[in-house]
Amino acid sequence: MAETVVLKVQMSCEGCSGAVKRVLSKMEGVESFDVDLKEQKVTVKGNVNPEEVLQTVSRTGKKTEFWQVESESKEAASAASESEAKETTAAAVTA
Image (cartoon, rainbow, N blue to C red; front, side, top):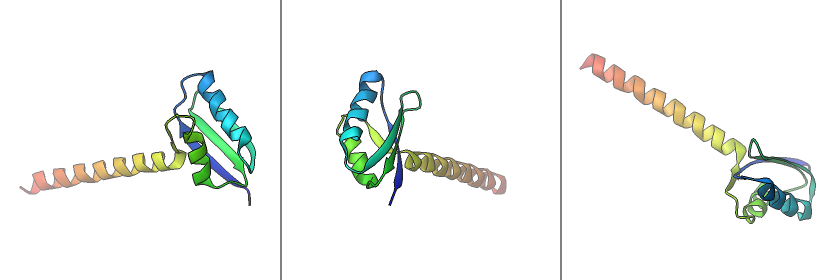
């Protein structure tokens, strides 16, 4: 079954993106991939296991994480801080 895996990879130059391209081109099951240096985003499509893709790209020495996990955690942190702010304001009003 074809899977799409999106990763955030810290790449600072063409050499970094080249290293990522090299490991992905050798990985079994990869049908296609796109390395966006500007966005620091790597999209991999194919019959692959997301965790294996993450581990393979991590072996380049670049900090690598799943793209969605980070954006969801930022949203959760933002929602939590808004909730705390409302509670603090409500506590101050009732005091």
